[in-house]
Amino acid sequence: MTTNWTVTRILRDRNAGLYFVGLVVSAFGTSALGLAAGVWVKDLTGSNGLAALCMFAVWAPTLFGPALGTIADRVRRKPLLIRTNLGLAALLLTLFGVHSRADLWLLFTVLFVYGTTVVVQDPAESALVATIVDRDLLGDFNGLRMTAVEGMKLVAPLTGAGLYAAFGGPTVAVLDAVTFALAAGLWLLIRAQEERPQRPAGTWRAQTAEGVRELWRHPLLRPLVLAGGATMFLASLSSTTTYAIVDALGHTPAYSGVLYVAQGAGSVAVGLVSGPALRRLGERRFGAAGIALTAVAVAARAVPSDPVVLACSAAIGLGLPCVLIAAFTAVQRELPGPVLGRATATANTLIFTPNVIGLGAGAALVELVGHRLLLVLYGLALLTTSASLALVAKGVSPPQSPANASRTSAKSPSDANPA
Image (cartoon, rainbow, N blue to C red; front, side, top):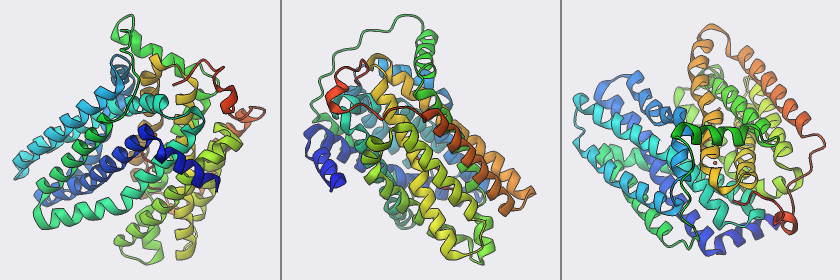
C-alpha cells in the first residue's frame, strides 16, 4: 500500500511525472540500440572482439567522469539535458553512412560520443531530480527509475533485434534518435526553478578536485561508494561465468537469455520497494543487505540445478541494485547543489569503472579456474564487502524525516551488470 501510494504521488507530480516518462522513453531507445550495435558490427566483420568493442566504446568515457561532471555544475541542468538529447538525436542519424567494415570508424565514434554525453547527462539528471522531487521521495524515485530502466531491458532489445533483422541498423538508430527527441520535448515542459549557477572558481582541474573531495571526505558517502565499486567489480567477475554455468546445466548458450530475464525481473521488483526500505534501514544498511543477498545468490549458482540457478539470477537482480540506489540517493541528499554534478560523476566513475575491469579479469580467470570455485570465492568476497559496510553503518541513524529535512544544509543511478 505504501509503495503504491508513493509511486502514485511521484507520477501525479507534474515535474517528476514528466521527467520519469522522458526517462522511460529514452531508456527504451538506448536498450534497443545497445544490442543492435553489437549485432551490426558482428554481421559486418564476423569478429566477436570488434562486436564487444561497442560496449567498451560506450563505457570508456566513464573514466573521465569527474572532469566531465564539472560541466553539469557550470550551466543550468534542464537546458543542458534538452540540448544534449537533441544533439544525440541528430548524431545518431549519421549512422545511415555505415554500410561496410570500412565505415565502422563512424559507428564507434558515435558510440564514444554517445557514452561521453551520457557521462555528462547523468550528474545533470541527478542534480535536476534533487530539485524537482521531494527530498523524502528521492529513494522512491530512484527505485522507480531502476524499475523503469530494467523493465525496458526486458522488452527493448527484442524490439531492436527485430527492427535490425527487418530493416537494418540505421532503422534502430532512427528509433533511438526519436526517443531522445521525445524525451527532450517532455523535459522542456518541466517547470524547474534553476538560477544560473555562478562560475566555479579555479581551473577545471581544481573544480574537478573539489567534487572529488566533497564526496571522499563525507563519512556517509565514502563507504557507500567504495562498497558500490567493490560490488560491481565482483558482480562483473561473476557475470563472466554465465556461459560456463549454462554449459554445466546442459543448455545451449541461448539459455543465458533466460537467466538475464530472471535477473531483470528481480531488478524491476527491487525498484518498487526501495523507497520504503531506505526509510526503514537507511542507505548503508539497505546497501549492505542487498550485497549480502547478492553474495549468497552468486555462490549458490555453483549448484547445477535449473531452479536454483534461475532463483539465484532473480535474487541477484533483487540485491545488486540496492547499493547503487542507496549510494546515488545519499549523494543527492547529502551534497549541496553547486558541487552535486561533479560529485555524482565521481561516484559514477568509482562505482562503474571496476565493472569494466572485472569483465576483463573475469574472462581470463574463467579460462584458468573452474567456475564453481570462482563463484564461491566471489560470493565470499561479496559477503566481506557487505559485512564491512554493515559495520560502518552500526549506530548510524536512518535518513532524516521530512519534518527535519529543512535543517539539512545539502538540499539538492545506470546499470547493474548481468551477473
